[in-house]
Amino acid sequence: MSGVVTPALAHPTAASRWLTRARKLVAAAIVTATGLAIFAVLAFPNLWLFLTSLKDDQAAWAIPPQYIPLHPTLEKYVVLFSGAAAASQTRELEHWYLYVLNSAYVSVVPAILSTAIGTLAGYGFARFRFPGASLLLMLLLVGQMFPGPSLFIPIYLLVDALGLHDSLNALIIIYTAFHIPVATWLASGFFRTIPIELEEAARIDGCNLLQTMLYVAIPLAKIGVVTIAILGFMAFWGEYGFASILLETQDHYTATISMVRAVSEIAVSFNSVGAAGTVMGVPLLIFLMLMQRQFVRGMTAGALKES
Image (cartoon, rainbow, N blue to C red; front, side, top):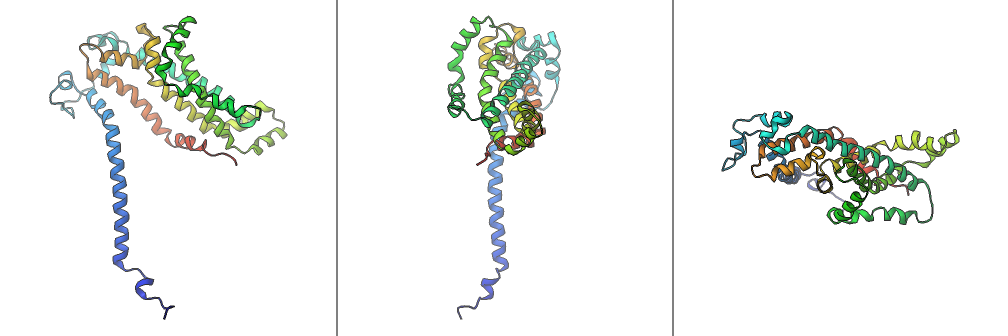
């Protein structure tokens, strides 16, 4: 009798199957609702910024606030790129196109420089064994342990002593120096995921060390290299702290400085600032959406290491 299996135990009833599906649907609904709630909280400031940029001056100051503009307009976007005509709205956004170009300059150049230097250094740490390598790699991150504002005064004095005060090139040097340690760490992890046998085969075929790195290692780790560059660009594109203490001439302002100074004016134009913030954020958002798959693959690849 003990070896007999009853039909009820052998085959689940329709009610039990329905109950299992219902539990899965409820669990999925809870997870989805939680994710949507978190997304709504995080996206609300950006959405509010965009909607404010579509309002006219009267709607921007309306009390109670208009969450959705009743008469949307692109006037503020036109004003941003109208040069001297923007001075009637806010003096700090008069030459917005120049500020965007300055931001692009101090973001793209350091991202490229730090990625190139960090990639070379990371390859060295990943492929060569020398005394103190682990300690040196650890010391590279010491500078990252200090909050940025704590370094304002020494960096300001150093830049002033070098005669680079009020210069965009000073920001390029600072940004590059700050991203090299992170780039080195990430690149080292990416290169360790590449089988060394591939490089040994290239050396047997006649490639020297530089050719092996350029034609074998870096192409195989290109997703990681691109990820390092993207992280650097994202960090520098909206940086405000160092730019605010080093830049004084209005022609040298970055976009973040101009927006902050526009907000600090007595008669602030919130819709103009909203349009400026949207212009700064949308291109980066579109770029990340297009590069999402490569970016995620790059972020996860460096976590894998050979045993």
